[in-house]
Length: 317
Image 1 (spheres, rainbow, N blue to C red):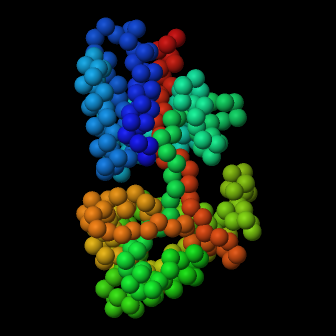
Image 2 (cartoon, rainbow, N blue to C red; image 1 turned 60 degrees about the vertical axis):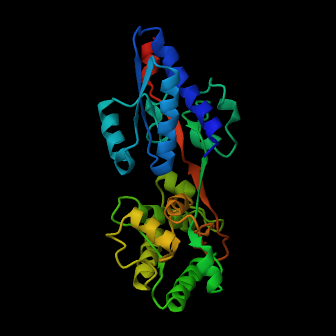
Image 3 (cartoon, rainbow, N blue to C red; image 1 turned 135 degrees about the horizontal axis):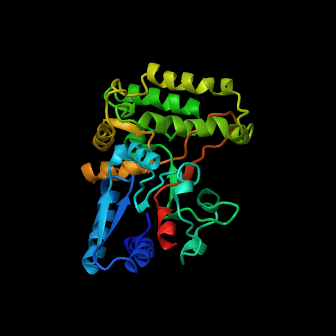
């Protein structure tokens, strides 16, 4: 995330855009709906910023919502009803899913400051800016530095090394430490792990499947090894036995307490684990390579974003 001051300015820029539109038409208090998919401390920070803004602007009320795991389902219902929040997060889908609902923000003062790596993700060839990106998503496995040092282990850079590290963790801990903890009872951790390794399998310098995935010519038999490899993780004892019934919070607790050595989540789990155990020493590494000869890479893209519902253009008219 950006620093608090910068975050506050960017939130203000969006809210002021809306307020400028509505104020000319409303003599009384203006209510703006703002929804985000972020959870935990990030959601609390945003709520605090909204509270400070409304305290300084008593004629503006912000109805802020952070429903967590239910966010995507709620947004699909809202899209079907064409009844979106005034300001909302697009959580990786700014152009493909939410594009037709979003106002063009190219005229905002911050639009020219979007970094080059983010431009293809949140803009189109016609120059439309779909959302304000606060940050980039850089995702890879996390590991317990103290445990790895204690057992003389190095973070894995390939799939085979990942399996070897898992086996070493089981052996050296006498089975007391889970190599990788997954909270599969929630509706995203297993899919998140699948996403990370799928990128490594299909987007490889040796054979890049990106265009085939986009144009519909992808041969799905190429993807079969991914299912087998995830099954291998389970059968080789790399995952917690309750991987399909544990929750994400259980993963954070296990990682914080040293009962789990790794998490295929991303750096956000470190923040949650540190809130439980401030003395945790955690590392963050690229996703191990799935194709021989490849180097490990982080998965990245759109993360914390806010866009404005297109209906405001209709109100302007």
